[in-house]
Length: 226
Image 1 (cartoon, rainbow, N blue to C red):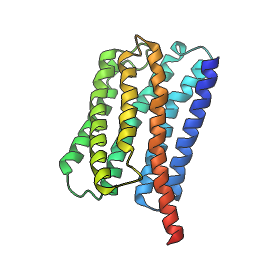
Image 2: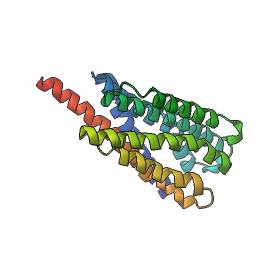
Image 3: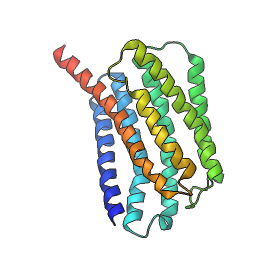
Image 4: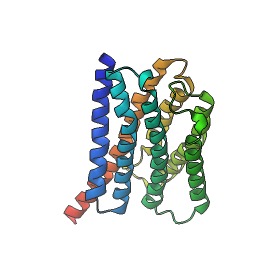
């Protein structure tokens, strides 16, 4: 029961923040860059809700294993939406720093995204079972991790060059999100307590959304002052 209460409260606060911030930026934002940030946050909240809502339900009822199918479907949807999340973040980078060339990098990001989603859709993932094969858990996350590394590197390069105060911590936030997530993929099956790392991973995503919110606030202030 304490776990159910703690997780449910945390999930409600997290999803409420992500969806509220995302929809506000998406609807009220005038700058196309702000709208992209809003789309990212909305997609994050909506995608994660497919996993977190069934998880909360499972914790309050018959348990996680008894709700394996619903949890697995939610995990699949979240895996796909998170892939799209990072693809949009790549386009945020391009627009924020006015990147006109580097088409080969765009092709790499799209290729990794499509590959990741295709791997997620393979039946060998056994999404509907409680104990899913580790091999495919690792396999489908290889292109995802590669996307993360690219995002970290390109933001680190451009935020430093541009002296960007809004996104200067984006490489750290993305790095932390993967740093907390990958051990869960590798070891949570044999050491369930590792799953607790999903909490700081989620907080890293909250940080990313907050950076987008700062961008939204700046754009509103410039309109008011302008």
